Length: 144
Image 1 (cartoon, rainbow, N blue to C red):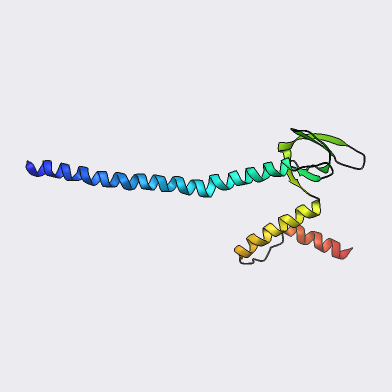
Image 2 (cartoon, rainbow, N blue to C red):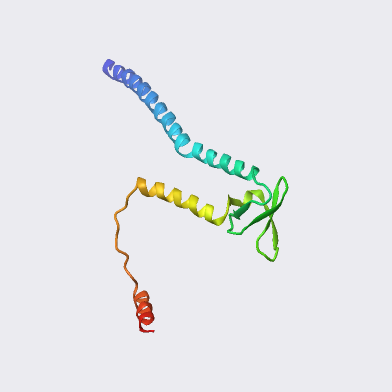
């Protein structure tokens, strides 16, 4: 009878030690989520807000929908862009702006980003197989 009571008290102290390690694991998981997910997202939001606040008349931009044009007017919430030589003007919210710069500058920035990721990971090159439709199209082009 005393053995059962003694066993119950020792298991209670063991579960107290287990509780401390559980709390430490939860704190560790929260820290990992913060540094891998929350913090980088906040940095991206801050950079986008700085980019949108630094807009000025004459800048070239691309919206998140893919519309490309030059800024002709700016207010605190909206941007009016001219999209073609026909002087077509469209008004967008500043939150709809995806990137700033000419198409060449944007392509160069995207290429720099892809080069960094390619250096980090060098995937094995696999040959690309052509579909039968592609080979037939090539044969027709060669015959002409």
